[in-house]
Length: 107
Image 1: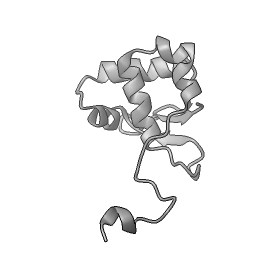
Image 2: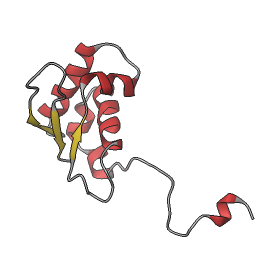
Image 3: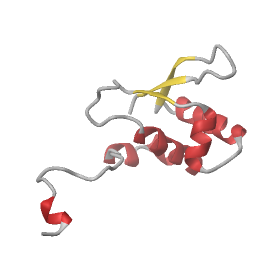
Image 4: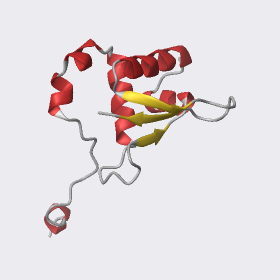
């Protein structure tokens, strides 16, 4: 039998869930494409079974590596944009330069 037929029923391959009402909201349409890509990258670290309770810990460097950019100012701007439109909330700021800033996804 092929691998597709042996797959368990109800088991999906890894994916990033995006809610249709979020994609249709006016706030999503106002986001820049970089901020949208950052949201999808952050959402990919959010567990579907909600065991991490919406908390995602990504540093600017890790987020830049996820998106394939080296511009920290763009990453900073996109994080602020997502925070401004209410997609994420900063839970703790960076106490040291090497510690990541912690965000919680709301939507």
